[in-house]
Length: 266
Image (tube, rainbow, N blue to C red; front, side):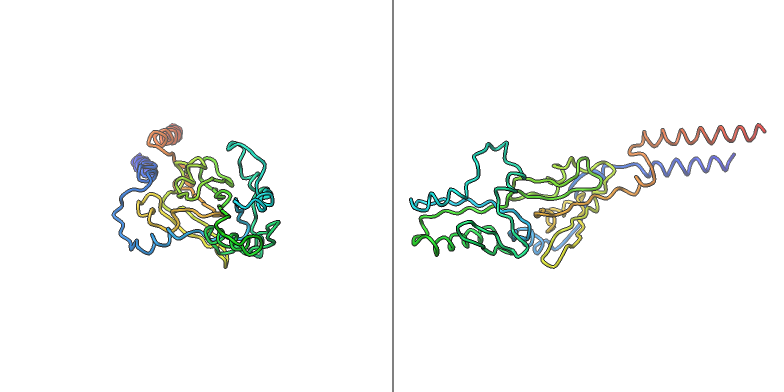
């Protein structure tokens, strides 16, 4: 019987240790981590540079009477804010092709690959000035990314390809938009797959440590893929709370005790 007692105690201890605690669930804790944050903050604050397959929203206005009618081609069909979505922007926006160009009906192609939206505004202004205008003060150009598109998968409540119409989105906001990480998701090692001119790279970020706010991957970029891995204890089939573990242990204990009684009875 002693062997069974020790076995039960061992199982009981394992189940308690496998419980999901606050340390597993709480974002941005003070873990006393120290890092050289200056370089990271500078990288995080750097403006986004346009990549292939990005969609740009371009708004052009002019005080020049002759150019006004020509610019009507840039104005999509009037619609309410509720109707503006990634689908309408896909058809009304300007997609960056594989060569890094966007094609304007009155300006032909403009290369935008690797440029910021501010730099693209200046390029469009200059192209219009060179072709149609003599006074740059008569034209107003606004260029924005047509929504921040990203993908979330893994241990989240509602993953998929998502779009947020904001210029700046941090990874916690992005995950909240996907239904947040489940209790069984590993917040200490979230993967961010990011696109670069030479291909994709995988980065790691610990969202339970407040130092994550200084990471260059804390703010997501268009086309990022966020992958949330399951906790190891989920793979073991353990419960999420002490109550669940006790219930599981009680069931196992009952089965083993019944088996022991039947064996002794024979």
